[in-house]
Image 1 (tube, rainbow, N blue to C red):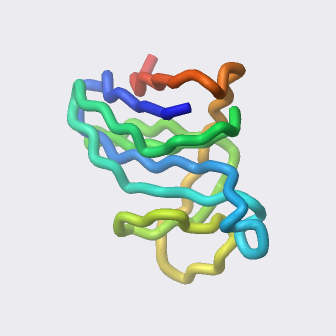
Image 2: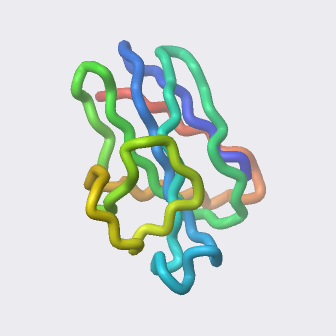
Length: 116
């Protein structure tokens, strides 16, 4: 499925996504991430194509709003791709990823980002 995010928040935001990947089996616990994607209000991004129904995301808005969850990982401050979760990093930002599941992994999934 193509995983598409839409910013329906009133300000711009930065987004990162997490996903199961065999690239990170040996050093990342089987999970990788990519980010930072910039989304202005009303804009969209498709950061991932996957057949796995479980993914995660974290977003933070210019006004301080966040969308987070219990899966804590340290990620680079600069844009990154296929960053394994359990790779040791002395620099970066600790974020809590929110789990997102889809029961229809063969179809495209759209995730609106809005506070409420």
